[in-house]
Length: 186
Length: 354
Image 1: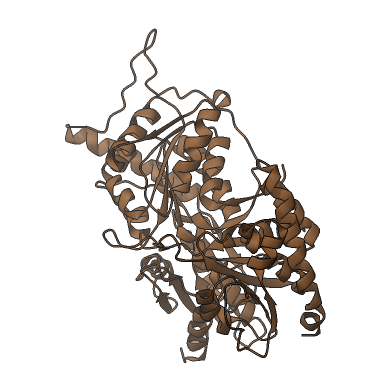
Image 2 (image 1 turned 135 degrees about the vertical axis):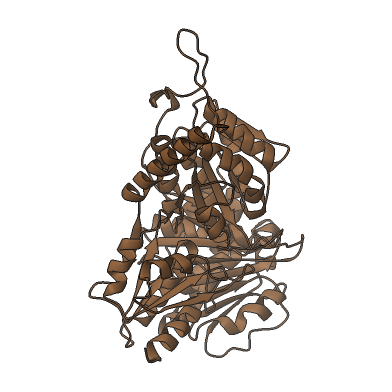
């Protein structure tokens, strides 16, 4: 197993955080993991992304030109990374902010209105958790319970945020699960 | 101890504390600010001292003072900041002071940019400051190795009474990987330094100095330093090889970040014709010349890959002594080569007639 995932959005949407949760869960699953933020002279509200690699083997490059999957929370991220995804890969697209679907037909597309579902869970700020849940549901890349544990550890200092984020993660996971057979078939 | 997921910069800070370092002097610069940030929070918790100095020049001379007082001390910076520390580094080498300096390299020359680079190889391994001196230079390729080498850096600095440089880049510093801290040393358990200036009541004063106005004395001091450097060359060379058993059609030589990327390239090239291996120097000074030749001797061609315009390749060519052709591939300015670029270079080279 070797998976490279790019998570992208604009600054403040929490893509670095869900990348960390994914990497943390991968580590707890006994895998090799790397988390690499794209850093540069960015301004507030600018684009933001990170690359997570989860593998059974020692990881070489922590960045990739051809990820196995992407989670995109805004339109510039979809525009930038859509064509890079490997054939048979997974694209989780936040339809709450992105007004088009991917044009790719050789990948599994998981459309999910992350903002709306996060609001249902209790806060629009948890849109990133919905997206992560959807990716986990479709890809089964790591056990969702390990991600829940990672989330609880990460928010240990602010425990009242945990239930809302767990609900948001769960809502996304259910949507992702509906796409799991398609992803597995590929 | 359980593994933790940490940024390279944070792991470097924690590893220093676990090595008994309680003194940090520095000045902010991207992409290594997470090191001073981490130390500013952690050092007060363990009874240590963190000072954000007024400049890199000041910080590096604070290192001189603290090391002279016998404590384990470090700083970290990035390329332009390290340039500002070169005067003090030469003084510390001349005065034989054990310090650890971390350079998380960024693109240059001048202010350059903030993205990963390996273009300070010459500065680190060939001098940087004035005079005939050498620093031990360690180049980690992962977050775990960065932590491990920090522990070694403090031990080697004390062993040889010499500055040790840890050479990383923005990618090693910013990346998160699982890390485990294997040892912990308390400062009070470290052996006392009989040469340090801790107050001379009841003993002869110790003097820490690099000024020798008498030519005979300065020459003898230089020979003394050279004998010490020769011991380092004899004892401290480190390297790692990958997929080199039985020789290679193309042997890639790379360190730090680029070695990881080369490893991915080599994995993708497996079973595709040309046999490709990796030689990764871990100590850049002393450079593992003999080990490189022993690996290269069984190989046809050498490809050196760096995030520079060609610096380590000089040492690679020196190790080859013209006995093997050495090609170079570099990306600079903060551009990081991908595995596919190394694959392209390897295939071009493997296909070419010798």
